[in-house]
Structure formats: structure tokens, C-alpha cells
Length: 301
Image (tube, rainbow, N blue to C red; front, side):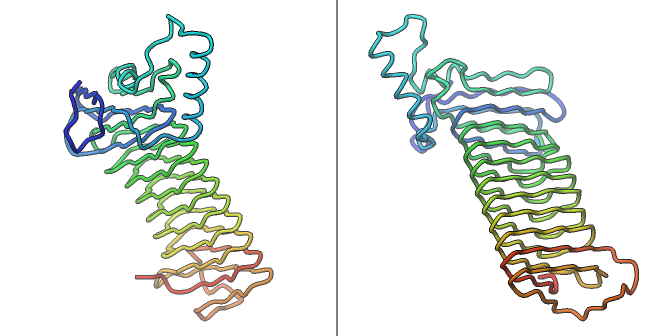
């Protein structure tokens, strides 16, 4: 372990490095804090774990308060481990078995309630799995598979060549290029994906959904947000919103079959339309909104 510099948060910083060939299977489990995975063009894995004092939330703070009150009322339990942030950093699990890196906050309470910041540097193409109760999750660089879950917090990832699953109970989801299948869900945040190449399902309770280039079968649902597809090229796109607007941009030269309906708003097309198909359409767009407007137009450059 090393002491941090003046620019780093106060407290103990735990650092460990592992040398091995090939990509890594990264598995991170925290109750609260922050997770950052940096995928780079170099071998081996480097891990940093420190206390994250800025990531405290009402639930974990309340849990720590209850545990402290119980200890004060009934006296300290000699079997109970120390509960300082430094102890939580030291007691976190960091191990490599084969090519699988496992990082887990302490199982002992109240150490488990201490928010931790975890930074992992690993080779490009590594697979990343993360489960957190209340934490932001950031993956930079190109990943293989992604499985990112947080109860409360934002999730972002640059790129994935394998299947991707992203879930947030309450938080934004921002993704880059997703080349394979994608399942993304958030209870109350916006969803943004710059490029989709595989079969995908995206759901948000109240947020907006923005998609860049789409070349695959996609289903999108939101309770009240707007739905935007900037550059639809191929596949079957199904869009549904209770009260938001729908806007779909069609790539130049694409023959598309479009079916947009608004119950109480306006539905229109900036293109000439034909009631009979003029050929084999490579793109199918279906959109439904209860009270918003629906528009099909040219893709944005």
C-alpha cells in the first residue's frame, strides 16, 4: 500500500499489479462507491482501491449510523473488526485466479458500508462484470463482454465487441459502439448509444432514448421520454413511448418501410411516401406514441 499524493483523496491507497498474458475476466462487487475500468494496449492488470468520501449515500450512511448506535448501546463486540475507511480498503478482496480478476468489498459490517473507489487497468478486449448498490460505473477503451449493474448511479462504456448487459435502477446510461447484442435498462434515467450493430432492447421508465447509427433489430420503450434515432440504416426498429416525441432519421439511399402512429399528436414524413412497397426494404420502422409527435426525416450528418 502507498500513501496518496496531495491531489488524491486522503487515506490509504491500495495498489496491486498482476502480470499475465491475454485478456482478463474482471469481476467487481461493491456496495457503494465508484468503479472505473480502463482498457489499454498493454499486458497485465493494475488495481487501485481507496476510500471514496464523496460517494456516501443516505442508505449506507444510515446503515453505518445504526451499527454505530448498536455498538454504543450494547458495548463493542470484540469479534467485530475495526470500521475505519483505511480498514475497509485493507479488508477488500483483490485476487487473480488464472485470468479472472475478482474485486469485492469487505463482507464484514460496517466495513462493507464504506464507499470505495476502484480503478482497474487491463488489456483491451477484457470482459467486465460489475455489481454495485450505489455507484457510478465507467469503462473506457474496448471491452469484450459487458455486464454492468448498479442500483443507483450512472453507467458509461466506450465500446464492446461481445454481448452487453447494462442495468441501473436510477441513473443515466451512456454507451459508445455496441457491436453485438445489447440489453440496457434504467428506471429513471436517459439512455444514449452511439452505434448499435446487433439485436438490442432498451428500456427506461421516464427518460429519453437517443440512438446514433443503427444496423440491427432494436426495441425501445419509455414511459414518458422522447425517442430519437439519428441514423437508421438497416434492421427492424420498434419504438414506443407513452407521451414523448419520436424522431427517426433514415440514412440516404435506404429503402425503408415506416409505420408511425400518434394517438393525439401529429405523425409526418419529410420523404415522399408510397402505400405500396417499391422493392425489398432493408429497414423497417414502427413507432407508437400516445400524445407526442412522430417524424421520419433524413439522417443527420
